[in-house]
Amino acid sequence: MLASALWILLMGFFAGQIARRLGAPPLIGMILVGIVLGPQVSDVLSPEVLKSADNLRIVAAMIILMKAGLGLDCITHH
Image (cartoon, rainbow, N blue to C red; front, top):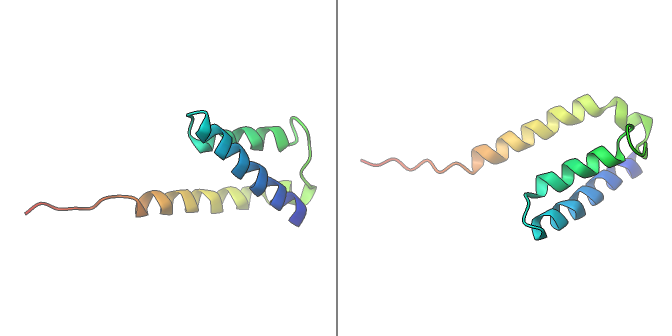
C-alpha cells in the first residue's frame, strides 16, 4: 500500500509540473495520472489503496478547501 501511495504522489507531482509547463493547471496533470493509474486503464494500484479511496477523497477535498480558504483575501474597507 505504501508503494502505491508513493507512486500516486510522485507521478501526480511530475504530471502536475509537466501540465504547468504546458500552460495548463497542475490539477489537470494530476487527474490524468489518477485515471491512468486507476483500475480502468492500467490497474497499477494495490487493492488496499482502492478500498480506502473514499477516505482519501474526503481528505483530499478537505485539503483543497482549506488551501482555498487560506488563500482568500479578506481586506475590509472602512
